[in-house]
Length: 87
Image (cartoon, rainbow, N blue to C red; front, side, top):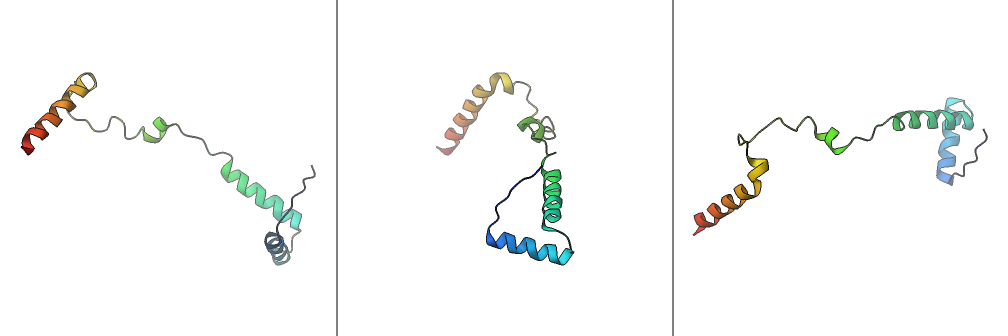
């Protein structure tokens, strides 16, 4: 399948030097480069936030079993104590 690519002068010169150095055609260099690049990028899986942090979740605990139910109340109490300690 024919594909046309426009290259800037710097990239064209680099491609020509590489082709001469490797004794390969510019077309072969471009095909190999595209295959190499795409084979490294394409298989990458997008991970969800949970998948990125799942090894951290549930590893440590506070020792309190009521945080999910009384979290706001506990936080307010801690802030109240802190405020009283400063006076």
